[in-house]
Image: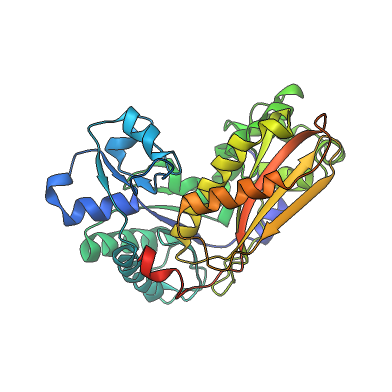
Length: 362
């Protein structure tokens, strides 16, 4: 068994990541008993609408968040499609947040359905983070009728992985002395920030697992991946210095895709459309509104281009975000031979409420 490195021990905290199970769909199934056990898709109907959430019964058909609704309907024509009711989801989310606050003031919401909690110095008389997580999950079930999965670990990165380990309705704990052995056999794709393109680059180096990644010296990783190399080096050793920040303002929601092979400008539209759809779903989950749409492109030579637009009225649908992002793409004037390795779409100027948008969405 490997010994935890000094860096991990020095920054050890008691972190819980709580993630509600198929939140929007679960609320619908709770409130409509006839939907229980059936595939439920939370989405507006429309040619370019996207899935906001899918029940576990629907996920068995390959349906996922941000998928085009029309595609989801083809995969599971027997699914029940429910229009989102965000006022109801926010009310349940507030119930869950109040449960968190009974145990600690150190709560960092990530969206309506998940949050980090630092219980290193919590308010509860319970002596371990594991018992606190058990109590939180029990309270959520008793007071909302919904299930939540939780991960307990010495830092945020590990707690996030742990909460996914026994979904749905599960609890998984990574003790400090278990960190390195737990991570070692996992594929490098489990590390945050490692998408398909980065995974492919690592595979070219003979790196398939986190154990493999630990064998590479920091200097070599930095040479290959720049600043992200140091982050990879730390994550492979279970180190994450990010603290739980209860009042951290969310400045922007963005989605980036690094391609396995470089694409021409003419071939970027599908990736821009998919990224914009995912941004819209993430915005809805954040319970915020946003005004400015941003497009980011990175060429093969690592030159970065950005474009942005702030419409008079905030976007009120995935269609609008997609159209605005595609409009920004049309404004990129480069030679047809230019190749791109990355595309990103974001939305900024976020606010908690927006009177322009609220009537149409809520």
